[in-house]
Length: 615
Image (cartoon, rainbow, N blue to C red):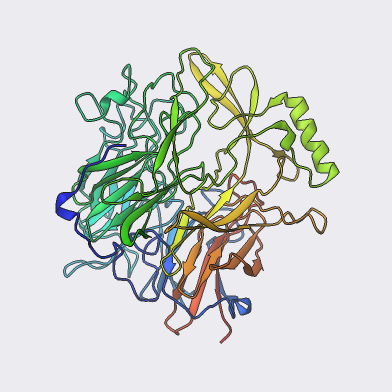
């Protein structure tokens, strides 16, 4: 971990989050700090059981036809000044009255294109320009819309559209995939973006972070995620492994300390992400949290959570800015977490681990030409919070029937277990933990500053994987370690949890099973389930979360982890909810529920559901 002291800003400054005290929800993480903490208190642990559906919006504009351009939605809406803004899986962006659900306007994207999977960015405007919605698209466009009318913003690119597939970003491969799956983070007059690139093959578009002028759409700065010869840390890519390598991208959200002007960039793994013989070395800035000047993209410091990633352990959750109270001091901190459920609490000015980190030896690779990095970083506190290994004795035993199915899968597949950080093999098929769906998935965590709790949902989902060689390139076979008919995991539960960490002590405050297995007999249902999307927290002490493949929206008491309200949905909501105050003074909770996703829950839904207490 490299660091650079920021002398001019090392003095104590106020909490980074902008002063947002209204009942709006103006960015994916509530504000630029990403903590998803709402100050609203109308809905409490005592009355949450009275929540009911206030209104519903069907996103499909032609219900008689299946027009969705993507099979599911993981999007989170925004609410500003009585308007709810939503990107849909039907190639549209809509504005709704946030109190009644009445559609105010709709914008149809160019044919075949799609808003980002996670949500939209909102810029509040200035004296000369009206507020704008800004977002990247599946096909690599950046679009700006007038937030009041839905019309393309004048002066932004060509008719409100910028083609961001520039020759530099395409790495000399103009036909490579490049687009966006997450909203930009807005800082002053900049929209800071990551990107979505391919998982394989290894060579493709660059994963650089970029910032765009929100008024003109012009490129303001680029931070190169893979240093090139002559640039700092280029030596971490041996034997020209940097050439045209793809991945090392921010496919989820980034955050900004607006008081200090620092952006925190969470980069993923290089491609191909299960074999690294063609990109030897530590591979900076892959799997790294990088702090840069938000106005210029200038490098400040970095912390790498996995060296030379050959497990797809992306640093994929949004870095959350918070305060750690330790030894009588208030430390400005950032929480970084990847699929291992290792929580690294770092000083967000210097990058130093607040509770220490130890490099520990890990297993070598069995492949000629592939050298696994000999050590990996482990936080001294808190402990690892998800399964990182598997032994065949740990097969699920919830019912005799399910155990028999799982044992048959192991026998027919000639499966073997694996140790923590053991590389994939070509001679045997392994049951690997954590799988591609975490630990924590992309939803990441929320922070309650009143309680000092960082709260996140975590999966235990094994994947059955093996390396195979096709021609000159390594690929993999992969499948979930589940009963394929019921999608029931084949290892001992829990399969999904909601976990709270006290950031002042780096100790686990509580952990609760998240989700039930409906087809199990009574007394066996409390297994936890896999989830996508993350939690939100409120000042009244509630944690709201959907995400699970058992199709529920839930509320937990943030202090204790007790589940205090559950609503059965028609389809799973693999998205993060929001809460806001309507023009009528009522507090609302909203979530998109379409089912689907790679958790294989039944799809077909098209609803935005909005809840409130009775009038």
